[in-house]
Length: 394
Ligand SMILES: Cc1cc2nc3c(=O)[nH]c(=O)nc-3n(C[C@H](O)[C@H](O)[C@H](O)COP(=O)(O)OP(=O)(O)OC[C@H]3O[C@@H](n4cnc5c(N)ncnc54)[C@H](O)[C@@H]3O)c2cc1C
Image (cartoon, rainbow, N blue to C red):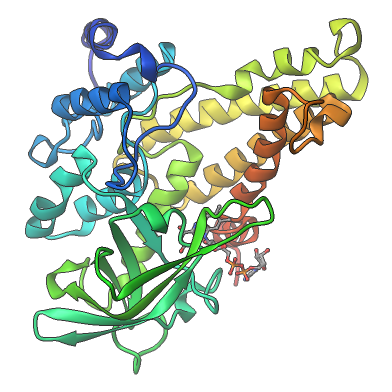
């Protein structure tokens, strides 16, 4: 345990460093970079990323040799609090620093760590996630995308679906079948694939909204280096599940790999709701609902802090499912409350009758319904909690 003066000194040093080095343009709402070479960064985001990477604070808890700052686990929350205090955006986010990076750090060989981690820490390359297939979503172990070893490389054939951001990605980590003759959980490997090859094709899936954040990704004789299997050949089910815990803990706000900045939108909810209340007063069932939500939200924040304090690695195991689920449900309830309070102003998609913040609220409400699907559905998390946390029978 660190003594309180060491923590306070770190807080003061961090505050001073952030005041001097965090550009104004990355404070407040906005997008954070996630490493894609295809999305140009504005000047302030680029400066912020470079300074934080230099300091080791894009991945503060990683060892210094891999681009981190080896930050003590008691100091990590202080850094995050100081970033949030000035509403500094996360300098680098995404599947590199949050999902595949910590997986390589935990389960990769030394050579794999040296090859991949420093670049991930500097945001050199955006990562896609190749897990789901048309026939393998919740039942992920039914996947059929296949990789065959040919000398020093694998030849990959098959397809993935719902690959978020794949059109902007440089790399993809893929769960592939490497031993089709073995039982379904035993013949899978996690493989890193360079997307800059003609044999990897990305086909956008257009949503009802007109946007295409998802893709189908096709591998037609795509190649990957044989030494880019993470965690051992045919051990991909174990490795892939651990990566999912990093994903779920990111959704849950308890992944301590990256430096999570930004701001806490739920704390402004009462003010937003009040703007739609008669005479500025929130009464009746809406008031009770809002109070319950604020209590749940506060409990959620305390739980996140407790889990971070109790977890020895960069993310907990099965607890990530519980916190992911409760975080998603609390967020969705906050959205529902705001939309209820907004009345007809909460059902606009475009048009002059709506203010920008109203259209944003409606879009957030709809978008965040995906929080109980992405990274494993609500029912899948409940199954994991029942079996692995509560020990209930299958
Ligand atoms: C925003 C978003 C981003 C995504 N990004 C990616 C990505 O980048 N890469 C990627 O690989 N995938 C991605 N996905 C896909 C996501 O992982 C899958 O949608 C999810 O795992 C569910 O699979 P499915 O869609 O095939 O649904 P299904 O598995 O077909 O499930 C349909 C319904 O049946 C329920 N169900 C299924 N099995 C059980 C069971 N055993 N017990 C109880 N209920 C069950 C589910 O809970 C769900 O309600 C993304 C999804 C979303 C929404």
